[in-house]
Image 1 (spheres, chains in turn red, purple):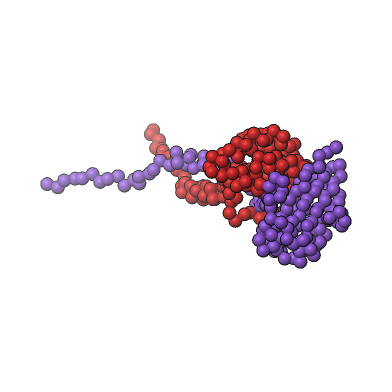
Image 2 (cartoon, helix red, strand yellow; image 1 turned 90 degrees about the vertical axis):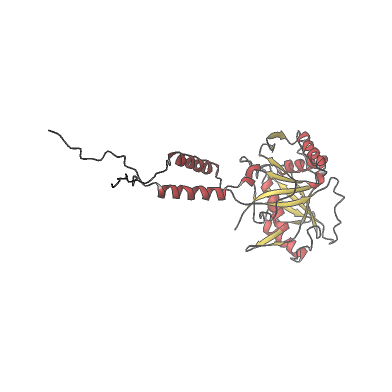
Length: 146
Length: 161
C-alpha cells in the first residue's frame, strides 16, 4: 500500500526582515555613540570628580596626554615611564613639535592623574614638563553634576 | 498554428542573506564590546612657565596663598589661606572666602584677575587638590558656571622627609 507523504518537504524559512531591521538599528546606535576621542584614556586611571569640569567646546591644540596612575607610573601613548625617567619621552614630543615649526610652549599637556595619587607626584610631573619647556597644563577631572 | 510558450517561474527571486547577517552580527558584537559608558571630562587650565616669572603680573592686589595640609593617609586636614585663616577641610567655606575677596566677579579675561598659589603636602591625595581648585575657580549655578579665579599655580613640591 502506497502511503502519501503528509508534509511538504520544503525548508521552513522564518521571516528575517524584522530581525535584520532591529540589528541594523542596534549597529547604528553603537556607531553613533562610539567615541574615538577617548583613545587616550587609560582604564587604570580614575579621575577625581569636579562640578566645574565641563567638556571643552573645542579640543586643545597640540595635546600631549600624560596618564599618571596611583603607583606613580606615567603612561604616554604606548610608552610607560616613571616621573623621574619621563624626560626622554617628553623630549621626543618637544622635538616633534619643533619639526613642525612649533615649540614645547605651544603644546597643551593634559594630565590625567588618578584621584588617589599623591598631589606631590603631580607637582613633580609638572616640574618635569617645565624642564623640557612645556608651559600650558590642563588638569583633567571627571564631571560631577549635582 | 498556435505556439505554446512556457510561462516563467512565478517564484520570488530570493537573495542569499546568510553571509550578510553573519557580517552584521560581527559588526554588532564589535560595537557592543568596544562600547564604554564614561562620564564627561573637563580641564582646569594651569599656565606655569618655568621660573614662573613670565606670566602677567597680578594687578588685583589679591594674591592668595593656599596651603593644604594632609595627614599621613593623604586626607585633607586643613586649608590655610595666607598663613592666617584656617577653614579646616571645608571647601565650601573656602569658596565663600574667595567670593568675598573677588566680589563674585569673574575676571574679564582668563589671564587677568587674582592668582592663587597652591602649596600642598606631598602625600595629599590629588582628589583634594582638584577639590581646592574647584572651590577657588568658581561655582556651578544650574547649568551655568560662574568663574571666580582663572589663574592657578603650584608652589614647589614639598619632598617627603
